[in-house]
Length: 490
Image (cartoon, rainbow, N blue to C red):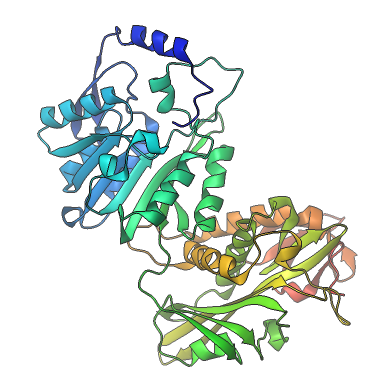
């Protein structure tokens, strides 16, 4: 798949010998306990636990009878046949001609109709998009990615077998797929992509790549094995489809403007200059020479939500968006409950923050999220405080680059998207705790009531728990009550 240095002419000769092996008859059981009969030739990937996980994801999708589905890397055809049984109109593709033949045979054997093509995302020599995806748009795209990383010390199988297991493409298969999603019409505007990955480095980079390309992303299913490996299905979509994105040259406060409007959930308003932007406790936000200042309508609900949960989600969104600006994870710190800092040399300085505000009217609560992030500044050390800017660590730093990334990141944590599993609160708590713990080298130790303590955990209510030298626990409800040894506002 694009890296010819791994395999050579002798590998092709050895591959011919592998074709003499006998095809295997396999019966795969769907999530509804329905049998699908498969005849799997040599070099074709058989159904395994990852197949089961993807099938469980597809089974939950609403209205399959009205949707088109494309499976990339169809292998034995198990997923495509299952999708056709659910009612999807299915197109399948694979770069392995034996997988194409196996999928076509399996479709006939199991009494369904699928359009199977040879090819897939890869170098141009592998064919045009229409060759493997057809000419019509798809509502759903699924791909059980070759998620293993190539190890020079490990023996190789044949080229066709390895193509189902290893991402040997130097550019990366996720990157190639995202390029097609942006430049072609294979995915409908409101469509969904589901990628199955492992928790190795290639898999972990998929989230950052999606955000960097302006796509929202969320883990929708996972399975952990005894050896520590974890498989995940990632849901990917265009953030807040068909919602307004409005730019104004100057405004007092984007949060206030959206709070007083009747704009729909998902609306984004951002400004070139925000003259009266504010943070927590009404603290003024300094608008630097170049800064992102924007707000989203994130919900209109009945009753009062948990404000801590919303702050944690928003903080994670800003944290991950900044990392997607090609800034090393080790240099980006997440401070509870919702500030993001940059580690620059020996200093830790604030680069951005979030503010969640709500207003109740009758039985309805309107919730607005504001995010401010410094892009560039001529003076990082003010009289009363110091700040950081993205251009200190990223050559890509600009409002134009940051806008689609932060929009996608906010949607990843906050959008209610049909077909995408809603985030559970315990997953948000776990993600924030992991990021906060990883940030302690930049933050230092927490100080509460003039006593140096250690961070212990994030509680289910979104507050944090510290532990002192006597092993006594202290629950903190306000971020203003805690100082950090390596971070000073001034």
